[in-house]
Length: 281
Image (cartoon, rainbow, N blue to C red; front, side, top):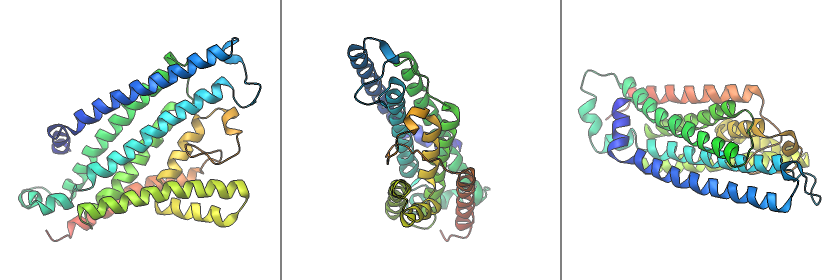
């Protein structure tokens, strides 16, 4: 774990992420400030006034949508980081001969896999916590809006990254770096698409679409976890909007689905340990 963190520092991965994250937060804060300024100009009565042309266009509903957009961006970027940071964690070091020097030392193979996993997990968890803090403070200080259930939603977002990290490390024990990256990234896209398909199926009461969405969530439950996180952050006025939402959902996942996601991440990590144990270097 320590060596993985040191490698992230030496390759300036952590520095690059921090710089880009600051730029993103500056852009997000500017956008939120612009929204608040336009709302105050259009609504002299302040944040309690409702847009007469759209009963759902209340200040809390729009502010929560901006917060949801910020959280969605963090969740997406953390997922991409999990994939591309760990995509060659095993296969890449087998190809360049690094593991040939490490494996003969008095260290078990499972310690290599778990250590790398923990190193990447620490980086991802720290990134999500830092970015969520930035979005929440921006919402409170600039927008005067307190997002709902931030801690619970943050933990769920961390779970999304750990799911993708487990899948990527498992894939790295089977495939080359390039193939692993393509496969995991495509599965990530399929999971997002499956979530939208399930929303359409729920809206249209079309069971086939619902079953397709459920099937994709079983293959990769990352989007299911995110949609549960987005649901608990939304106020009732936003949830009352019935329609497909690429950033959230109006129908939460069941607790059983979240338990499945936790078990999914653990089982995939265990499979990676077993696979690497018997892999021929």
